[in-house]
Length: 137
Image (cartoon, rainbow, N blue to C red):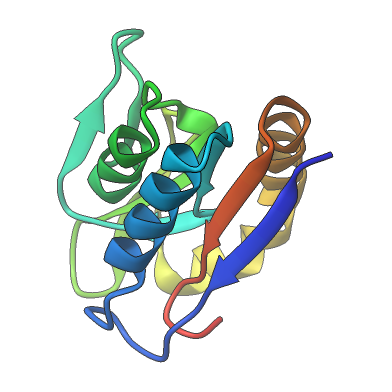
């Protein structure tokens, strides 16, 4: 099972993504097989993997810093805003639903097994997983 370190912050644009990328690069240079992980990310634009799946661009940049290919397990839930109160919910790279914020928070518990499966499979495969928190939560 991988060692883990988590970077948290109290707001967007606090620098969490860059710190995670920096740690991924440092650990890679030190000879570790390292992967980034952010269970839930909100971003308007996404990255499309070679398999045609969507994930957050920040985790792609972090994967590149770690010297590995982007993998949707690194960002199992992507929220793509569609309005001030709603988002398209992407789970494991595929469209899950379009939900208003209230609906998402009511159904969020359903997604915990997806998050656990993604994290645990990374933790089995890598020496270190660098986790990124989401706005202090």
